[in-house]
Image (cartoon, rainbow over all chains, first blue to last red; front, side):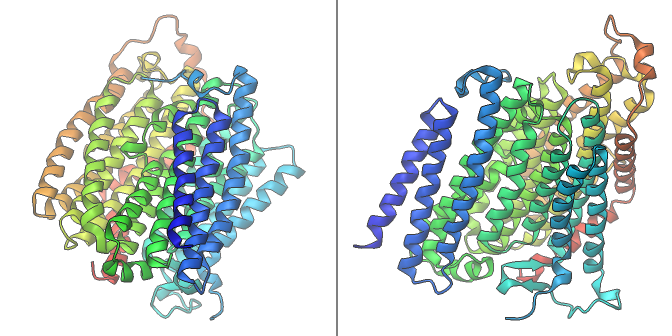
Length: 101
Length: 505
């Protein structure tokens, strides 16, 4: 096993997530896609950490931070989506077009 | 491992304690304005160590060796540059608190949590100024944005505010994911996340294209925070939908934090590839100022207008920075000085503009320009204040904005080649376009008739909440003072730019 295979998995996660963010209409699914992107970053970080044999383990520590940040982000995101659902009875981002030029 | 320098960390420690204390005060009292008072006291307490650190050389109790205070193995540095911005962010958060008090008291909002989140966001901005490591920088970035996402949606029943929050949130997390991907690529190629080590190693990278891609990802991620063009879509909508005091904080605190991150990453971590990110930032600056200004002309909502103006001003701030980097590193220090000076002045005048806009809108009941006609007939003082801040944003002497523009032009032309001249010409044309829409607001206030059906006497009788009036006075004083004595801002800029000289820029 080489580093390439792991990085490819990470990049695949990231790219699938990016596609999801750009193509999904449901806010919850967009949020899930963002999580997928962050998971891809985590795989990358841990892979590079092992590959470089980093004495400080900066990559692994960073991935722990990213997990915490992602959790916080889900909390914030779900709060906002619930608020929207309560007001508009939908979580479809395309229906949010009150403001545009 | 040396002992931790607590003096250097004192502003952050005080702000972190303030965050906790505001939560406790929120629980124990029913008078919610006390929470804001607590937060403001915390801001005052936090500015004291910033000042003692800045004037450390002339203080007896201060044990400075004269060098910058480097903490945690170089991951966290308290130097002149970070101190300027820490002071700026604390000031901006203080003004944003003053603006919020009257606004929140005027309707049924959750109050205590609002101040708590605002102080947390300010803490993130202050930490950002000192971060010299990707871990601390990303955590600081999230600490600035996370509370801001929630604050943008604070008017819970208003679908516009909901929309502002979700747009801000989705672009924010997408930008964060891109930034993190860039960080992971750079980390994989260099094996380090500290800026000084990155700067040392980035000259000898074997896989240069991949490294450059990582750097571009990182800069794009910060482009979202400063609302520069590829990531500007959220800006006008969020500015319009979010509560106006939150918008004031976003346009100064959160944007400023983005600029600090961008400056330190670009100059301190990747000076070796300045020939790559320089042209990218040049392009971003050019498109931001042009698009921001042209779209701003047709705006009818003052908050939207300020949103596009904020995109355009981001372009002005990036201009010297991109031009100097694109043409080699000879003029980096001057460009750095221009950007820091611009940010300081922009912070004061933009906060003032929001203060006056909030006061007027609270009386008129609308942010639409057409409802603002005849302002000078029933509130000459407010109309004058409006003229002062908007003319300052347009860059008319003797108001502070002219010096910001002057420093920017000086730095771009000082680059001395077509990277600099072309962006200076573009900026000059844009400054004229910007004058059109800034003066449109002033024209409406002074020359248009009062809209039909408006009870002018009722408007005249309305009173301005004292905290907002105080914020307005403070910023108006600042704008006029900085305009007449631009040396004050210039000194701050030079003081902040010392960091570039330190690494031989």
